[in-house]
Amino acid sequence: MLYLDYNGSAPLRSSVENFLKTRLENRGPYANPNASHFLGSKCLMAIEKSRRNLAKFLDCENHQIIFNSGSTEGISSVFLHTYFKFKDTDRKIILVSDTEHAAPINESTFLENHGFKTVFIPTKRDGETDLDFLQKCFIEHKNEIALVAIMAANNETGVIQPYERIAKMCQEVNAPYLCDTTQILGKASFSFKNCDADFITVSGHKLGALPGVGALILKTPNEFIPTIHGGNQESGLRGGTQNYVGIESLNVAVEELMQKSDCHQKIEQLRDDFETKLVEKFSNIIIFGKNANRICNTSFISLPNTNASDIQDALQMQKIFVTTSSACSDQSSKSSRVLSKMNIPENQASGAVRISFCSSNTKEDFQQAFDVLSNIYEKIQ
Ligand code: PLP
Image (tube, rainbow, N blue to C red):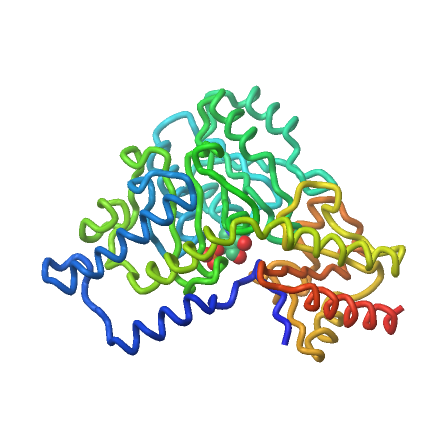
C-alpha cells in the first residue's frame, strides 16, 4: 500500500503510535488536567510540556498558544471573535482569498448574514493571490477592514503565498490577519515571529498526531474574545476539558518534526524528479502551480480530457491512495473550486489528482507512484 494523501490527513507517526501504546499499557495517567490532585497535575504538566515544544516549533511564546480541536475550530473562533469585536463599528469588510479552504469561505458567508461583507481576493493562474487587488481593497476600504484571511500554503496546489509580505501590508492599514498555516507546518520552514500574522492555525492530524487536536496561535491573547465559555481552561480563552492525550500526541509529532526539519529539500527534489519524468513521458500533462513557490510534498497534476475519479479508482486498485482535490470536497462531483478560481479550463481541471507525499517517502515510493500512474495514463490515452 502507498498512502499519498498527506495533505488530507497524515496517518499516525510510528513515534506517536509507540507513545500511545506505552501510555495505554501503563494505564494512564487519566485524569482531569484541571484537578488539583497528583494525577490531574501530571496531565497538566504534560500539556504544558507540549505547549513549550509547540512554541519552539512555531517560534512563538507559550502563552500565545490555545489548544483546541484543530484548524476548523481555530478559524471559526477567529471569525466569531471578529464578529463580536467589530459588530457595532464601521469595520465590516472581510477580505478572503478565493482559494481558501472551505472553513474561512463558509465562515465569511455566515458573517455576511450578520451584517458583514466579504470581498474575495482573486488568485492568479499560478496559484498566487493577486496582491495588487488586495492593495486596491486596502485603499478602497481603508478603515473598514475587520479581517483578512489568506492561507500560507494551499491544500490542493501546495502553492505558498507571500504571507510575510501580506502581514506587513495588513499592518500598514491596521487590518487583523488570519494566516491559515495548516498545510505549511512540517512541509516548509515557518516562524510565527517572522510571519507576524495576528492568528495562525495548527491541525494535529496533518502532522501525524491524533485527529481532533490542534491549536490557535494569537499574537495578542489578551485582546482575544473567547466564544467557548467553560471553566478557566486555556487561560479562559477556550473552555472545556483539554484533550490531553491528543495534545500529548501532538507533542510527540512536533518533537519528531523538529528533529527532521532538514528533510524538506530531499522530498522537494524527489517530487520535482517525479514531475519531470511525467512531463518527459506525457508532453501535455499539467502541473498546477509548477512555477510558484510550493510546499515540498505536493503534486497537483492533470492529463487533459481525463476523468480524475477514474484515475483515483485505477490507482486505488493498485493500492495507491490519492484524492481528486481536497479531502473535504472529494465527495463532490464538481471539479476543484481552487482550479476554477485559478481560471484553469474544465478539460484540464476534470483530470486533476492531488498526490501528497510525506517526509519518510523513499525514492522507491516515488518510482512506484510514477510507474503506476504512467501505466494508467498510457492506457487511458
Ligand atoms: N485549512 C486547511 C488549509 C486545511 O487543509 C484543512 C484540512 O483539510 C483545514 C483548514 C481544516 O483542518 P481540521 O481538519 O484540523 O479542522
